[in-house]
Amino acid sequence: MLFIIVVALVATYLISRLVGLVARKWPDTIGKAVCVNAVSAIIAVAAGALASAADGGQPKFYFAFLIYGGAQLIVLIFDVLRIMRLKSTA
Image 1 (tube, rainbow, N blue to C red):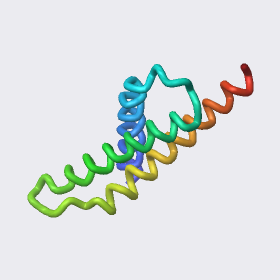
Image 2 (image 1 turned 135 degrees about the vertical axis):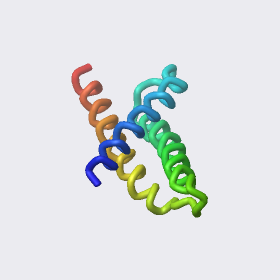
Image 3 (image 1 turned 30 degrees about the vertical axis):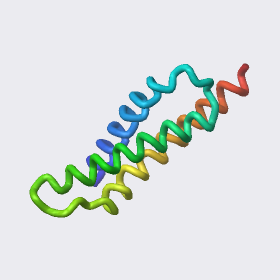
Image 4 (image 1 turned 90 degrees about the vertical axis):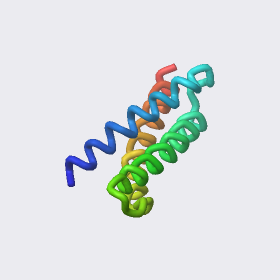
């Protein structure tokens, strides 16, 4: 189970950075972090659910939401803390 959580953290972090490249001209705000992480969570949950159906079964959106949604929430918390730290030092 730990392996699944680590893979989910890495996957959601990489997807959020790719989505962040699209929004790189936006100023670094908490709103930008929430928007980028929301879009990447939708992508990660959909991809995880559809990957669970690769063997011919039904997509498991609830399971994918629990794993990838939780991992994306952790990535969002680190993004918000990074932005708050940057704002306090500036």
